[in-house]
Image 1 (cartoon, rainbow, N blue to C red):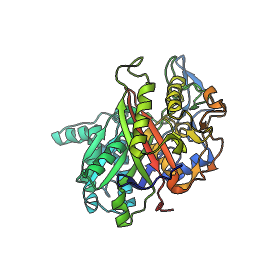
Image 2 (cartoon, rainbow, N blue to C red):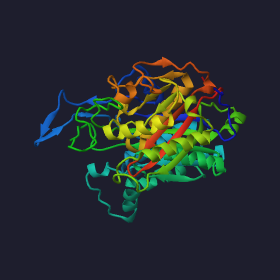
Image 3 (cartoon, rainbow, N blue to C red):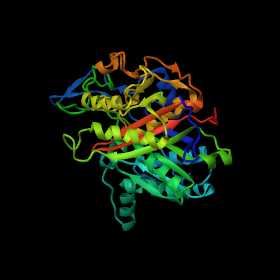
Image 4 (cartoon, rainbow, N blue to C red):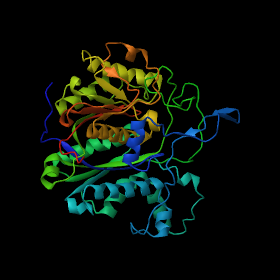
Length: 429
């Protein structure tokens, strides 16, 4: 097997910042993943009935996402009170990612770009109606609840003069934001990019009602690639990575946590059962294209961080696409997992959470367990399957430069993204 070497097209991950249910930062999330701890909470001791409908009392929410140091970011209390907590979290975490990259402002890095996977605001719907007595009040409410303001608000407050782009693309939004950020860096549009996504949902800390034929789990657990899989459940998350061209990061002595070696995006088109249905061929094509751009072969990958929602149909389609790509690869040579089993489905932020898991895996040389997959589906029980679903953490024995992982994120409507992550010898360990 050829050992991958650093390419002039590689993008260096120079910082990470995030908040997750039950984990206040990226390191706490990684610790939970390694230990096989589920971060989904139960709000009542058992499922209950509400108006004749079954309520599953499970969820994964951020603690106090409304808290915000408005004075630090030079906002008045009146301005801050109108801001969706998603905007508050976005600004705080982009600031943390910028500082982690070694800069006090975006301008210090040259041209800094901001790329944010977004979803609609639901916080304002839970608040009392604002009395917009003036044009200024109306503008504060408009800007405070619009996801269109996410990236530009960061650019304004952190003095980022590169592209500031909001990506509203359902589940694949944040990983698509990373893909666009990498393209912007390679083209010279920016010198540093902050890329990720934010999902904070309201009402918080309540259960949900699953429906027959829907995607929500009646058991309240995400069992990706397990024969008992019965659906998914949604979660909060907010996370960003700081990205630079690899050569620039090495020149300036920046800590390089991992490398993004290639990425690709496509769409299913019309050849599928319906708008929300997945497409085997399109998923296969986007993964192959990302690997081609990264100049790696299937047998070189030691980890696939799958989209893995825990829906029987979606997981079966994804596994079929992966099996085509990995046909002939040595049995059990590639770990398969999905962070959604740990955390739930973080909607537009799910891709960046999976990417952070993969970055940590290649960085520290650990292949973490897959939670809630005690009974893998029949395809994974085939002794010739190239995929291994870990029951516990194990050492990734390859040298750091040879550690390669693939990360998938597939959105409703068929926009598919795949990113290939590699280890870096100057990993900051």
